[in-house]
Image 1 (cartoon, rainbow, N blue to C red):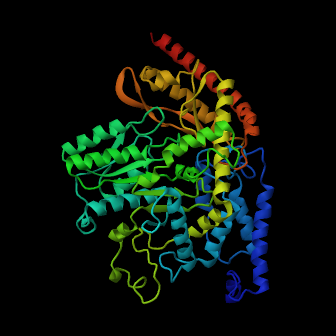
Image 2 (image 1 turned 45 degrees about the horizontal axis):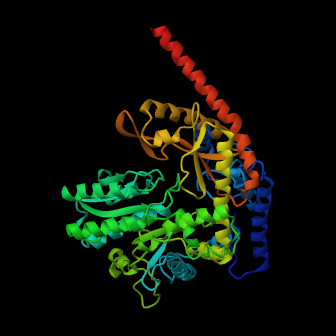
Image 3 (image 1 turned 180 degrees about the horizontal axis):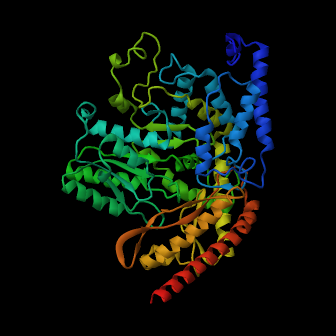
Length: 559
């Protein structure tokens, strides 16, 4: 390979037709061949690969850098091998929050890749800076922030947003913490259903995981405000300083929505009573925040003609989401319900000037940001190099608009309401354990005999019974997982914690998840889902009975 050949591996510098055509042909070949792998009756591309430990050991042994580069057609073939067996978003893809990247999102990401600017500074990444400013303004107005005072940036997922919110909370309360370190008596609070990203953030900032206080959840999987208040008072009166509260507005497992308004009221009352500094509230709205797009929807006129039950569900979500503006910071993971590719997350803070507390001095960044040119330098981000993912976000917002997002988010509610009815009609031993949470997620749990979720959640079940039901659901997990190429359900080993009648320990609840995330999943497909579940639930029950028989026989022999 000579140098001229190497040059041909790049897009042209002059827009010549030859290189343009070669690039477009390669992209077309990749897309056309991938499309042959699609099957609407499966939830993967092509054939399943057996990805056991030996598979990865083989990759380690076989993989070497070629001496001479391959032809680009051969590279495309290698890429196509990688996607074989990859999950794909047909109507049978109903696991967790892994959406299909929309066409506008893909085009936005392609634009990002083609210009390949560093979004750290507008001199290096003007397209990303321009898109980022537009997106910050759009989303600030959506949630009710004053767009002339708020600010933000795109970051590495909800984790990046939770982390920045914590960094801000510390910096506002202790401006010298960057130089002198974090005080040893800081505490953070989140519900039992909150994402583990806060745990990572507390560890990374040096506060320590022992200083994360988990607050009990209610039957609707939202934070118990009374428990929050009691635990905060206990921390304060023991000499601790509450610095950060994460209000989860749409939990990953059950779509529980914490009440930001009530949380803010409790914190304001405590800061007044104990003469504390302002306690930062971060709304982890990475998933659920997109439903704030209904905050200004006319529920009386109902211009999109949602069915009465769907409209009621959307109104129920709005009752909580309308208070997002009371949070000091929040986030939107567009790679979730925003329908854009990974990784496209947006962090917003109500007081944009507070980001200055995290900024670096000019002399610390001598090669960017302190020139006489360029006016957009994001030295306050933890990342030094930043992808301009705001371009994909901007493209999606332009293409979907308010009504497009309302349609797809409304369909998630429609499909889940219908699935719940079909599930409970088909299985007397299955219960929806997030019935109060109307949204894109249905969490369901099976029982040996009849469904008894109300007995469990009210603390009347024994720990042994809860754990036995967990094991039954574990068996269902394995059966569903083995056939996830056909229908891809989700599952969790801790959708929530509940009390038992014979222990003070709160026990985890195992459950399966139906997450309507594909734009192609409609109510007409739900009979297929029930038909898929039927033999697997029966098999889980049979396996459970066999296990119990074996245990009884072993016990009889021993005695």
